[in-house]
Image (cartoon, rainbow, N blue to C red; front, side):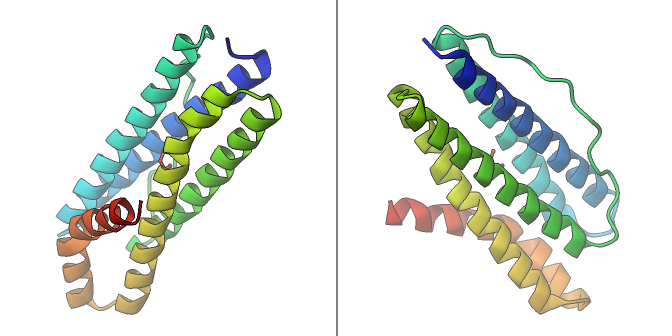
Length: 174
Ligand code: OFO
């Protein structure tokens, strides 16, 4: 059975994953109305779907452990961006905040001697490692490209390949 403290903390993470899904959905929608950003658009639609899956995993886990998962109210995320660079800076900032939140949860699970939750959270630890690495790589690439239109064209064309390359590397390392 989950302690009340652990349940509340996991429910806060449910809200954070839901907010991530909304934030990335807004990025997808913004990218979709910019000319020529099909790759970025697909990337953020996929990213948004993944965050929903992360939220669902938490909901199922909380209920499975005798708790009650709360479906959260959502605030409207940022819906417009000054540039592609701003979108990816925000993406990285967001992923760093999620990693910090997961680390807090892991610490709490240990403190509560809740080893099932500690074990469950390891999946999120690995996922965050991957997502932060991906967000950093994409920011580095955009910095190299600057305002060069040809570079942005190639970035957009290859963005989904960068993601699969990073998850392959991490799976091989793991
Ligand atoms: Fe939920 O995976 Fe990153 O944020």
